[in-house]
Image 1: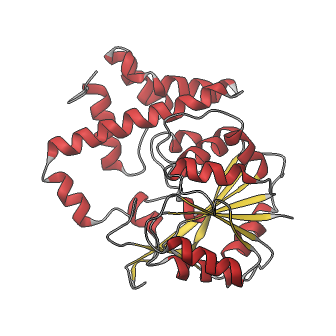
Image 2 (image 1 turned 60 degrees about the vertical axis):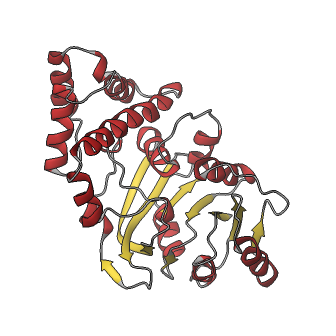
Length: 311
């Protein structure tokens, strides 16, 4: 069994060494770590080189290139680099708990390897010094974890750093031209839910570090208050997310979906193009929603009223 851990870095010198060490300390030791640097200007590349000299399981796959692709294309390149049975995605600033690999690989053994599979876990949200802020990111932010297509269409609960996919799922993404994705973890979750299995383990497998330079991060009270103090900005964000999730979901339509899943996706991506009565019917027939009641209320109200909607 071949296990590849995929790590994309960008100006990550502050926390990178700690994350790589947490990977090296895994209870499962049979793996390779493939690192692609996305054009760092700090000491990130030197840190990678040092670890490559210390551990033969670690490979710097673009040692001679400083090309900046962006996070999605960087991980896409890593996934295409060479085949493996299972792939784990790693961020540069978190810390993996020691049994992360072992736990997720054991879960994968329960499923048919020929079918697309994504296994993900909960996370502990921590501050810069790894003090725990929330024991469960899933319960704090999303109330529950998504495992079905209808849930994942409108709200993602899958974080890249706690995701493991099998080769069948990797082939689905690398075998198509997927345009305008919100994030690779969300799109892989959609592929898994639509064509195979999206599986959640109700245990944390990493410390999800929050700091000033996070590209993405946990929703905090400060972030929420900032949004509510500027309602025009908030509604603009809501609509951007709805549109982007529709655009992302359209990529699935190029795949051989079941009739049921194709209907669910087509009716979601075109919901703003139909009259009020049809929008109402689709919301109630397909149960398009968010994970929390309040967010579902806002989501459905915006779609029905088209408040602040821009054609």
